[in-house]
Amino acid sequence: MRYAYLFSDICSPKRGVNVETLEEVLYLALEIAREGREGRKVGTLFVVSDHEEVLKRSKNLILDPLVGHPHNVKKINNPDLRETVKELAQLDGAFIVSDDGIVVSACRYIDASSREIELPLGLGARHMAAASITKETAAVAVVVSESSIVRVFDDGRIISEILPEIWLLSRYSIHLSGAYSEKHGADIAVLSEK
Image (cartoon, rainbow, N blue to C red; front, side):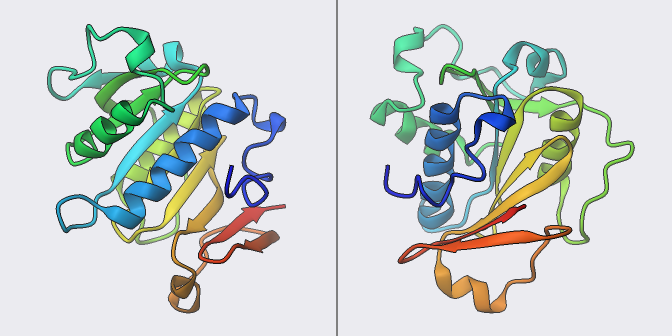
């Protein structure tokens, strides 16, 4: 994969999630961050792995548009599904992705406790939902911010920030706490906790 070497700190077995699934979600998140939809920036949330526990701590905001479709068409690496996800990202709520790469649900309201979660000022409800659900479950969350930044959460904390356009680095303030590493590709910067 194109950025696999940049994602090695994020997509690591120590996360306890399927590395290939997390990588596919990160690629899709970067596409959404870069492309937006219909000329505007779009934010969304992916919760990866431990899907049964995540489903217990969430509910649909609208009728789930993915219900009833066979698993083989809901694989995260299916090009048709990826375009569907980009369209659905315009709606409120999170995507729940199983460890084996099936997008099991869309438009989910995450109902996890925000107690003991501390986020930097300026990050909103989507980021709080990501931090909260990863604190209560074994899932990892990927947030696409409307500012085009992709943040990865594990155990209630931001563990990585991905700037899909390298020029953003000069005007960006880092939200990671503690020591971090910085990796660059031709057009991307990945900042990850050490």
